Structure formats: structure tokens, C-alpha cells
Image (cartoon, rainbow, N blue to C red; front, side, top):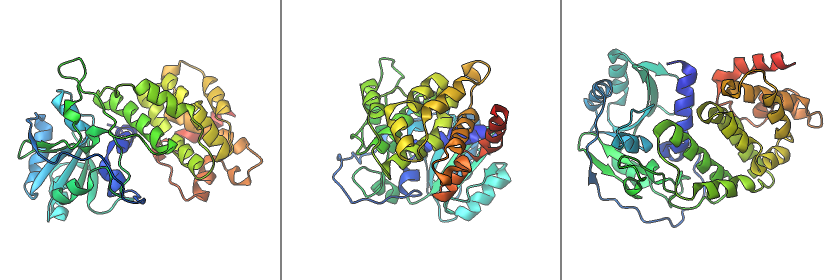
Length: 353
């Protein structure tokens, strides 16, 4: 698997990883009342591929528990193959666990922005993300109503103990089924509290549909229409929405296609955010992408970033944008999440000039 594919899969899944939001991201905010979670484990037997089972055995040697997290539990329960694997381990010897994994033959992926309790790697073409944390501590924090800003989709809170064959399902994700006997549907546990959070929910649902086969929540079309049809307001909220455009819309193009991503790009929410934030017109970005030769099915995240970069260079009224997208991000000390697209982005921009 190419590095871009890894970044796209694991990067997109980050919106559905509670530990990325809670333990590795910025929390902030006051504790609030949330829906009461069910803390009673339930029996559940999931089947793993021979490659997955071999790797899980390596992790189990030096860990008190190894647990599968989030939407991957639903995907496994539905009998689907996992495009990525997110795991929680509880080990006092995590440094040795890493050495065991390298000796086993995994290919590490750099995570310099992450603490030492978190690793990512490839094994037999499958991306893995592993967090080392006490399971009880994780379970206590992995609920809504804490100070952590967690994605309020029920399946994101699933914790499946591989050794015990039991699952913690605090918000009833396993009871949210489709008409198909083996199908599952996302369930929004509580409404988002801002337009930024609403957009993140829409993106997470879109990615989980494409990657894990989890159907959208009941009434999601109306919810999506309401979120995308609202204005972003002023800074800092407008800038936060625009940052999601830069971070995750390339994934949207690659996972859901240009026609789907276009609806998001030229929605009132994103148009107003780009106007009030960096002061760019996303309708011009959309027109530039439409002008790319070839079928829409061949459009990539690099085309989107190149068109956005070119439009930001064009905006003369804002000196901070003179160097385009890179200067905008640097001025705000924000990383370019899809660094794997940078060379191609600049190449696409030069080709358009």
C-alpha cells in the first residue's frame, strides 16, 4: 500500500477515533451533562484474518489486554474486511512491544506529532494505529459529557476485548441496524454544539460509509442539509470550518468522488467560512477544478489543494496569502495534514498556469 493510501485511510478515520480527540488532541471546554453510558460488557465473538490474528498475538504477549476500537467493531460484526485497524493495548512494556513488532516485520509510519504511547505501522498492506493506555482509564474518559470533545456517533465508543470476547457498547451502536441482517447504521447520540462540530459529524459519516460500510444515521440527509446550509459566522469559527476544508476535503474527493465533495465545497457553510476566514471564493476553486481535463472520476485531492492554493495566491487584498495555502497555514502555525499531496499539488498548480 502506498503512503498516500495509508494517510487517506487512517487520516479519514481520525474523525472517528475518540482517542485522537480526547487523549491526543486539544480537549478544552467545561464538563457537561451527557447521555448516561451503559458500562456493562456484552459477549461478542469477532473473527480475524490470519494476518490480523498473528499480529494481535504479538501485541498480546506483553499486554494485559488488546482491544479493537470504534467503527471497526461494527465492520467486523458485519463480516467486512477492515481497511484499517485501531487498537487499544494496556502494557507496562510498550517500548518492548514496539521492538517485538519491528522484529515481527511491521513497517513503521512516522508519528512525530504524537506522544510515545501511540504508534502507527503497516503490516501485510493493512494500516494499524495502536494506543497504549489503561483500559479502565480509557473507558472512564471515552464517554460523552467529559471535558473531551468526542465525536458523538455511537459506534466510535465501542471497545472490544479480543481476549475476553466482550464488548463495551456505551451508546447502543450494536442495536442500530439496517434492514439487512448483517448491516449497521450510525447513530448520533447527541446533537453537535457548533457548525464546526456539525461538519465533522457529516465528514465522519461520509468516511465511515465509504471505508467501513456503516450506513448513515436515520434522517441524515436532513441533518446534512441543515449543517451545510448554515452560515459559518466570523472568526475563529469561520477559520475552523475552513481548516476542515483543507484537512479533510481532499479525502472526501478521493473516498466519495468529486460530485459528492463538490456539494460540500460550495455549500453556504463552506463558502461563508472561506469568505470570512482567509477571504477566498470557493466558487472560483470549484470552477478551476471543473476545468481540469479528463473525467471527474480522475480528480484527486491534489487537484483540490492546487486549485485552492492558486486562488489564495490570487487574492491580493490579503498580504498574508501572497504565498498561497502554505503561507496561510504557516502564519497560523497549522500543519498541512496531507503532506503526501504537496509535490503533486504544486505540480498541478504549475500545469494550470
